[in-house]
Length: 142
Image (tube, rainbow, N blue to C red):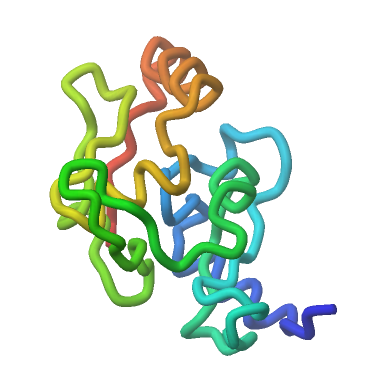
């Protein structure tokens, strides 16, 4: 059982601007509470320290769970995944021209898109509706 204090949980949420730090989905638009994710999972030696925590939607957290590396589909190399505490989102990802898909700008971004299935069918459908509603794309602030 995790022992993350409520003040740390609140700071993680605040620092993430209430957005998933992988796909940028906002808490106001997802069904269910955004989750505290261990960037380096406990099962791989990660800790409950604030530097190892980020905010994630259920879909991203479900696909990422134990992963810290992914395969770059362009090169086939094993690459460390995007690290929300060490990387800036816009240096690794960009929205497609229709603002629905997340595109990796480099090996880490591409590997993360694939490993976390950031463009799964459900995510694409939801984002299309968010675009229609004028809620999307978000402006990354990190």
